[in-house]
Image (tube, rainbow, N blue to C red; front, side):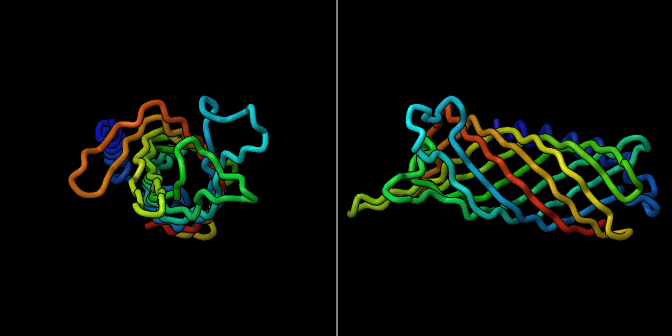
Length: 222
């Protein structure tokens, strides 16, 4: 599933970018290749099918700082701006015990690992230096599952697949620099446990994790 989704997105990126590269974007604030640094607020929580509504005191979310970088290519088609993009990020979010209450995501004691995204966006320009856009695509995130019974430490990566939707605003600071802010929602419904060494991976059916992020970015165009 992961390889198929990644190939489909990569093919879409190539199909959009190929005709666009043949056109000049020197005079446009939102055309061309871009790289960006990203940071923001990151929350992972139990989805609606696994949350514990019976106990309102049960903390079912973890939060922290998300940080990473992105690359992309945009093409100004006149009325709309079309783009493809990819991201690599990390997060400081992890489960904790708060006054004896364990943060229960439904998947155990975890810390958030790397966060991958491949997708596309489409936007409109209310002004020459402002882009309002929506985005969507494939996301893959890892959560490190850990436990310790006093004798043996257990450690494995929960490798999750899902989709991401979002919206944001990008402002051109100059001809080749920009800043942006965006909100994105991700849902992970497919996963497998990846063990160290020669142990085979194990499929984990019917997971349901929601992720909410508010991100800011600063980048350059080429």
